[in-house]
Image 1: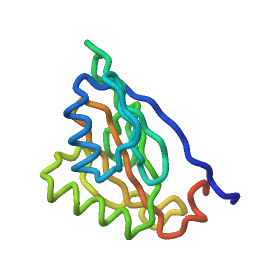
Image 2: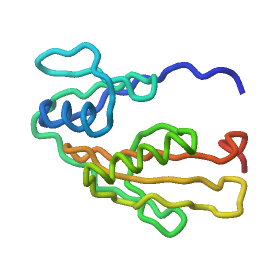
Image 3: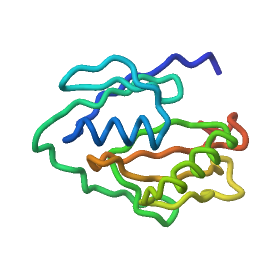
Length: 140
């Protein structure tokens, strides 16, 4: 696997102050540049940008995965098991409500992973996962 480069994603929020608190204080993402309509955050070395969009509807679609209703769309980062546990502990300490509680799915299979889903204040779904063996990230 080659070295990964940072990804960039821009997503809608309806309240920049709430986004700043959630991504900055709760998630612990350093803030980058900002304006009156957007804020850059450093999410584990990736650039995510919260853009204020008035009246943006919250997504409500779900897809079944390993017995859970996974919210679609969603985004997140594949972390090391230690980073994943630290984030789960941080979210629990901040009383973040999980859409899907931290757990292990696909147990005993090549794609076995720890995963958790939660929403930001604007209703954007996030998933963070960890593989005990990163070589299984794309295993079939």
